[in-house]
Image (cartoon, rainbow, N blue to C red):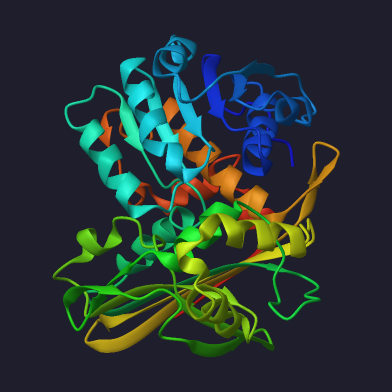
Length: 376
């Protein structure tokens, strides 16, 4: 895909926090498009040295815990894209505000996002958290479908990043942040149930379904709804988000987290998972949204289903979760630079138009690499 500059935009200086799998993909997309001068910051010099991009980027070793040093490093930046661990969200967002740079992140962590929202109050720069896949793209899709109905009954959002060739009892390989996976399996989940905002338990409300002839399960995980509960409060009977896995995954994770007590020993669980479960670049991302409601006096249902697979970008095989997560935040950055997204205060993902997102040079990854379908 040619992602060279498609609009007459000034060259903007961008800071990417984190040189991991997702940070690397963001750097590749932005550095190769011709619109952004990219600096990648990480506290790990070896991680920065392993960064692979087809176009040169600036690399800077920095201790994120040093607030003054971080704020100074972000000075003069148009935007800060946070691809670091969710535990650092508040610190990075605070530094971005002090540096008067726009702030975007990928976090699914609910508590961190609340703090970012507080930082955004009265700010003359934009704070746009949760710009990845879920929350992020799935939120944009769900809100778009909602607009097609006169009144709503149910909104169901399902997302999974799965190995194309599962080979262990979990049916899972590591494709993104291990800390992030553990966090969404452990923290309370939000939902609207019978019109009321509820907290639900992670790994519960297990369901089974098939898509294109393949069997899956889905269960509650934290953070995937973003701010959609607040946006749709009073308008929808049921709203929920669940993570897709191959059958049997939830039972094993419940055993590890609850029966063996690893929910309270997360560093040990992280070590076990990263030691025993290999990383794969051969993955598939599944996005599945179903909205039911009234339209024209009839009860109707509309669906969005999409599969995105790993692909070669910049001469390197990139995983589907890298592609979808990075293209999400890059598309939002592009729209911010082009004044298609509000440039101040707290910006919710559901404020972003799906048509604008998919028309964007980065958002097109969701259309050209995967195959999407809608049915009414």
